[in-house]
Amino acid sequence: MSEKRPDGVTVFLTGLSGAGKSTITDALVAQLEAEGRPVTVLDGDVVRTHLSSELSFSKADRDLNIRRIGWVAGEVVKHGGIAVVAAIAPYEAAREEARKLVEEHGRFVLVHLSTPLEVCEGRDVKGLYAKARAGEIPVFTGVSDPYEPPARAELVIDTAGTPLAESVSLIRAEIG
Image (cartoon, rainbow, N blue to C red):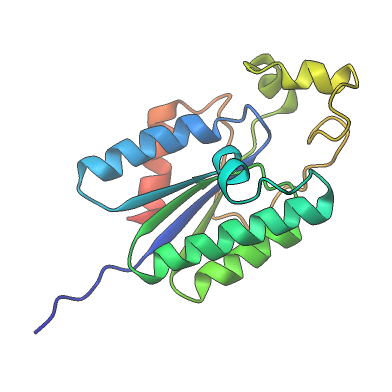
């Protein structure tokens, strides 16, 4: 008699640059790995470097990048793993397409980090908002390009007022 494979799940963190996606991902992954759970991290910047390096930041290319992330996350979920995605993913239709790709194989938990733009700009360790406001980055989410808040996020967390440990606990309660 074989053991039942645990159901896979994708935790998809979306929000503006500086909202806390990477910080929460690191803490969540550390907890899950400490429990011996298999985790694959799909960080937007890393995926762009290794899987989508030929893409620009046009809407079509950003959507294609999120579709690729959704497909990879679906493959992880199909085999009972946990995929943690940290991507700005500014467009609703692309996030919903990623959801469909994952839900063919398991659960999809969309976490909207609703941290206000002003807070994100204040955390701007890479100086990207300043460059965008100076016109050095022509297309930048939250400045010259829109961020469409998710219509059906399983969780909405404002990291300006929610401590890291509480944010991770909320996600853990959602995914089990």
